[in-house]
Image (cartoon, rainbow, N blue to C red; front, side):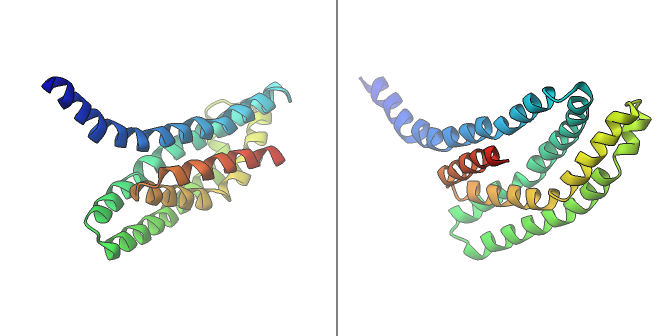
Length: 180
C-alpha cells in the first residue's frame, strides 16, 4: 500500500500540475500550425510557381520563427524565476528587455527579408518564382516586428504560468484568419 500512496502522491503533486501547463502549450502548437497548413493548401490550388514561392518564404520565416522562439524562450524561464521569488520589479525588467531584444532583432531580420530575393536567385530559383517570393517577403518583412513582440509577450504569459490565456488568444487568432 505504501508504494501505491507514493505513486499517487507523485501523480497528484507532480504530474497534474505539469499537465495543466503542458496541455495548453501543446494545443497552442497544434492550433498554431493550422495557418501554415491552410496556406500551403490554398497556394497549391493557384499554381506551381505560387506554391514554390510560398514554400521559399515559409521556409525562411519558419527558420526565423524557430530562432526567435529559441532566443526569446529564455524570457519565460527568467519571468518564472522572478515570479517564484515574488520579484515584481525583476519581472518588469525582464519583460522590458525582452521587448527591446525583439525590436533589436527585428531590424536585421527586416533587412534580410527585404533583400532575400536576390539570394534565392543565387541558389538557382526560377526568376518568376523569385519575383513572387519577393512580394511575399516584402509584405512579411513589415510584420516581423509585431510578430517578434508577440513572441516576447507570449513568453511573458508562459512565464507567469497563464497558459490557458495564451491558448484562448491563439485559438481566436487562428480563427480570425478565416476572414481573409
